[in-house]
Amino acid sequence: PDRIEFYGERQAGIITPAQDRLHFVAFDVITKDRDALIDMLQSWTAAAARMTAGKEAGALGAVGGVPEAPPEDTGEALGLPAADLTITIGFGPSLFDSRFGLRAKKPAALADLPKFPGDTLDPGISGGDLCIQACANDPQVAVHAVRNLARIGMGVVSVRWSQLGFGRTSSTSTSQATPRNLFGFKDGTANLKAEEATLLDEHLWVHAGDGPDWMAGGSYMVTRKIRMLIETWDRTSLLEQETIVGRDKGEGAPLSSKAEFDEPDFAVEGDDGEPLIAQDAHVRLAHPTENNGVRMLRRGYNFVDGSDGLGRLNAGLFFISYQRDPHKQFVPVQTKLARLDQMNEYIRHVSSGLFACPPGLAAADDYWGRSLF
Ligand code: HEM
Image (cartoon, rainbow, N blue to C red):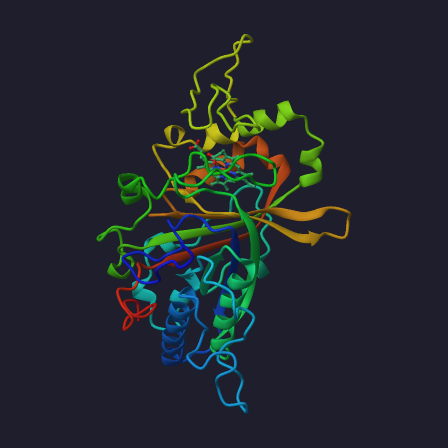
């Protein structure tokens, strides 16, 4: 398309076919004034509805207002198309502390994630009261969206951390070809897909009765910034790389067979009597049949934040997953991966986030957070 509908039963940006670019931002609320926060969420909703339709953030636009006032739009997206922009909001665990009277509305599913073995998290780029996931097929459009929401939120929120991403690492629709992550492997092959309605209902969307009513129809987002030790990986043999993942690098097929979308068969053994897909291969450890049927919808992006001053790329995967209950889905899988995954030698988790993404908005008089406050 080019324009993704902002209103609807679900928030856009979850099962929307993954766009190519990401600007993710987490905010801290800096006011104690509950009404100021609600006002800002109303302004944000109106601006998001406009920008996802390819319009300027405010009605007077970048150059249509009075010359004596700052413009209602920052201008860098003038002349650019909507580029499939989606703007998805999430509420972090810390929003539900004592400040805004939301304690009783905090879902159990939003309890902080545990510390996983090997975590090297930087608190300065983790957490946040609110988050915005802006995805688009033009990086300038995604950056414009985040910048204008930050501008509108001045005095109410401050940017805690943000992350740019390029090259989606997951397909979220069967209509998309599987992209590759920076290890060079296809990523998203066995992902939950938009077309799998029954599975999405079971594993992605929060049901009425799962927790507080305001989250019914929404989904929980986990973010993990995962640094990849690219230079070490690049000195590793192809055989070793494929063994670690459990799939071949060219086709993306499970090592137990030939084609990308074949179901992995973990029982098949080679001539040496060892399983073709190793016990500690990433796909075996993460596969639903090895995890009581647990699934999640992955929607991550590659990142390269320049270099680290030590001659290495500061690069990796900004992992995003959506699920009905992170403590029943992400947590058990990551607990296992953190303990056993051979890939751990080549990755470091440096940031973590958990956010409750409410359902979509029905129409223009509705706003983000209305059912919550
Ligand atoms: C599958 C890479 C982190 C969960 C895969 C695949 C690759 C991959 C190449 C196979 C293709 C596919 O089905 O998508 C990576 C890399 C990571 C990473 C490079 C870190 C830098 C994670 C994390 C989780 C996760 C943190 C969740 C805790 C999964 C799941 C699958 C998968 C659920 C599908 C397994 C299946 O059903 O066969 N990953 N992954 N991955 N990964 Fe990861």
